[in-house]
Amino acid sequence: MSNEDYLKDISEIKHLMNKSSRFISLSGLSGILAGIYALIGASVAFWLVNTYSYGKLFIFHGWVFWTCMAVLMMVAVLSALTGIILTIRKAKKNDEKIWDSSSQRLLLNFLIPLFVGGLYCFIILDQGRYGQTGGLMLIFYGLALVSASKYSLGDIRYLGYIQIFLGLIASYYPGYGFWLWVIGFGIMHIIYGTWMHFKYDS
Image 1 (cartoon, rainbow, N blue to C red):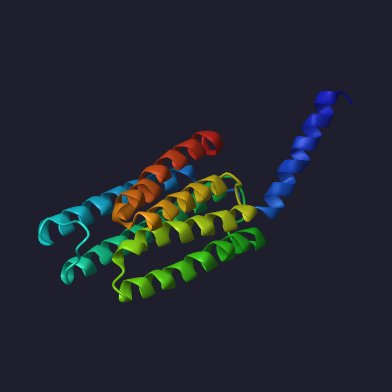
Image 2: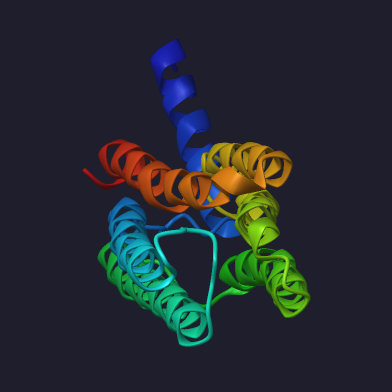
């Protein structure tokens, strides 16, 4: 056998090992759409707060606050549903199992940091420390991505590192939390999703 044959065999073995231990059917397009949803949601929240909170972006009053929370939840639900639908479609196209041990490990390692972070954000909101939530959301989401990357495409850990970095900046400068949230959940998702789409989906 030639060196090319050996390299080809090694590549095939590596691919089979990745398929058995990692869930690799994540869709880059879902990242792009999640970023677009985040930008739309942020635009709606910005308009609401800027219009009905006396022109001061970081002052929340009653129904404005809860409307913004509802918009945020809609963004999260829509992003999750889009990701599930596109992932299922890609898995079927690649003739891969959707629900197996690798996808279960991926989901578990992603949801634990996300769930804990969500609870902590609600505690912070209940205490009226609104300026801290943007940074906390970015940090815990980043930790969830890094944790899940062990059982999926390793590239998602880089997005996780960026989210953590942005979250730390937002925690230090809470007045910029909204704009850093927009960068992290909106712009970075679009950039990441585009990169992943051309690398793995095209």
